Image 1: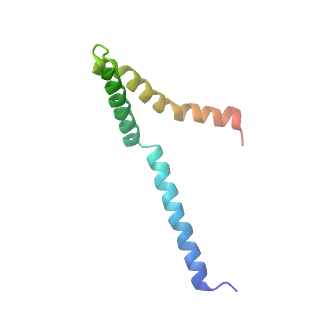
Image 2 (image 1 turned 60 degrees about the vertical axis):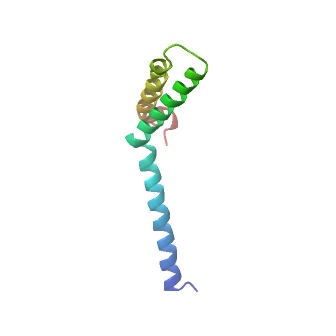
Image 3 (image 1 turned 30 degrees about the vertical axis):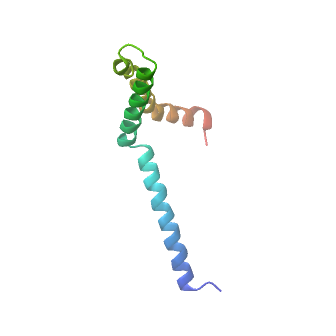
Length: 89
C-alpha cells in the first residue's frame, strides 16, 4: 500500500525534475548562452588563426563567430517550420 509520505516524496522528486528540465530549457534558449558560445567561438578561432600566423587573426575571427551567432538566432524559425511542415504531430 502506498502511504501519504511516499506519495509526497514522489511528488517532490517529480517537481524537482520538472524544475531542472525547465531550467535546462531556459538555458538552451537564452541569449546569455548564445553570447557565450559566440565569444568562445571567436576566442578559439582567433587563437587558432594567431597560432598558424594568419594576418589579422582577431579581425578574421569575427566572420565565423558572427556566422555561428546568426545560425543560433535563425534555428528557432527553422525548428518551427520543420515542426509544422515535416513533423506534423
